[in-house]
Amino acid sequence: MLTDAQEVELGPVADLPPPNWYTDPTDESLYRYWDGSVWTDHCAPRYTEAREALRGPGELIRDSFALLRRQWRVCGVAVLVSAALDVISVLLLLFSVDKILMGELGEILERVSDAGFDPDSPDNRDYFESLEFGFSVWNLLPGILGLLLFWLSLNLFTATVVLTARCDLRNGDISISKVLRQAVRRVPRLFGVDLQILALCALGMGVVLVSGLVSPWLLILFVPAFLVFLIASTPVFSIVDVVASAGPSEPSLLYAFRLVQKRFWGVMGRVLLILLIFLAAVLAVSAVLGALNSLLGSFWWFQEICNALLSGFIAAPVSIAMAIVYLDLGGDWEQEP
Image 1 (cartoon, one colour):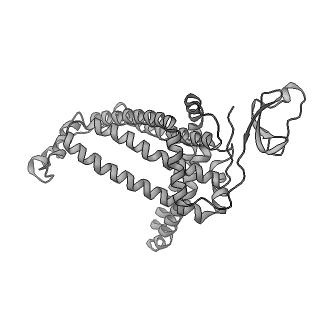
Image 2: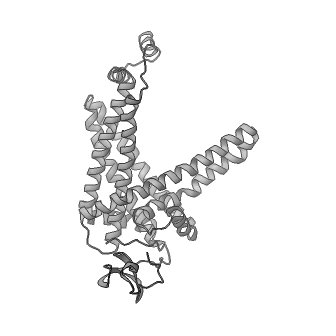
Image 3: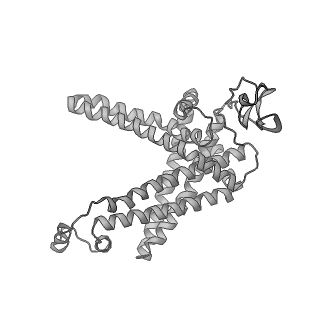
C-alpha cells in the first residue's frame, strides 16, 4: 500500500501495487483508482480537512435523520438483516436455557408472568428448590452460538450503516449488495476492536480488584479513576467503530484517539447527547413493548421481532451521527474498489 506522499512508479510487473484506491499523485485532495497497471479516470474526494468547528448538536441530529431518509432503503435492509439475526440468536439462547433447565423454561415463565406470582409462597419455593440443571457442552453450545450471532449482527449492522453514510457523504453511488459485501469484510476488524475495548476494561477492573485486595483504602483512589477512564473513553469508543467500519487501515483505537483529542470536549458533548437521546428512545420503546406484551400474552415472539426492528431504526441515526462527527474531525475514509 502506498503512503499519502508516494506515487506509483512503473517498474517490473512484480513491483506494481495491487489494484486499489490510492492518493492521487497529482492532487492529494483526491483518491484515484489504480487498476494494477495504470491510473484510471475514477476519482473521489479524500475529505481530509477538518471543519473549523464541529456542527452543532441540532444540525448534527438534523443531518443524521436527513441522511437516514435519503438512504432508507439501504438502512432498512441493514435493519431487516440485523433483526433476523437477532431473532435467531434469541431463539438459540432460549433453546439453550431450556435445555439447561431440563425443559422447565416454559413452566418458569408461566409462573413468573402470573399477575399473582409470589416467590415466597410454599408452592413456588418448593418448585424452584426442586429444579435441576444440566450444564453440558451440548446444552451450552446453542447459547454460545446465539451470543456470537448477536455480536455478529451488531457489528454487521454498524458497518453497513457507516459505509452507507460514507458513500452518501462522498456523493457516491450506493449499491446495497456492494455495501453489504464491504460490511462483511469489515466485521473481523470490528470484532478485533471490541476485543481490545473489552481487554482495556478488564484490565481496569483487574487493577481495581487487586487494589481492593491489597488495601480497601486504595479503592478510594482506583474506583473513581476507573470511572473517569470509562467516561473519558466514551468519545473514542464511539468513534472507533466508524474507523473500523470505513476508516484507513491503521490501528483503529489509536487513530480514533488522535482524532478525538484535538476537540475532546466538543466530541464528548455531542456523543453524550446522542447517547442520551438513544437511551430515552430505547426506554420509550421498551415501555410500549412492555404494554404490548401484557396485551398479547403468549405472542412473545411478536414482541421480540418488533423490538429487533425498532432497535435497528433507533440505532441507525446514532451510527450515522458518529460517522458525521468523524467527518467533521477530518477523519479519512479508506476507499474500496
